[in-house]
Length: 106
Image (cartoon, rainbow, N blue to C red; front, side, top):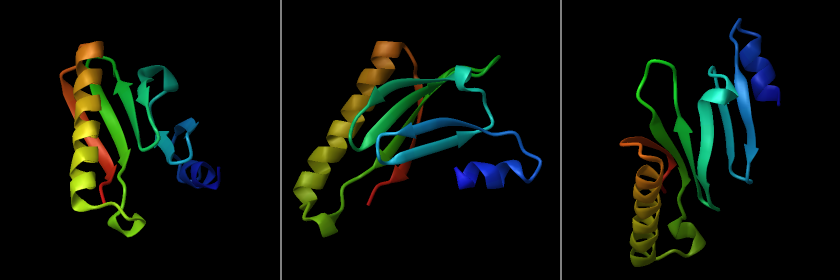
């Protein structure tokens, strides 16, 4: 965790939620107790962030497929609809209305 060591050298206080799958490393200033994994798949991860005195929100980390890997525009569109559906399901299942999506959409 060289990245975490570097971050902590600048007088910051960082936690890591750990390595999730092969695609995501998450570094945050919030204790792990404020972040819960809600859904994990090969190309996305959905976390619930529940900070004190704030409304909880879902954070979706996405690593979308690439045209260079042979994905056609139609297949990419269908895949993105799958991600959107997974996020809506997580919002419904966990009664969270707000969401942020970040990542590599290719």
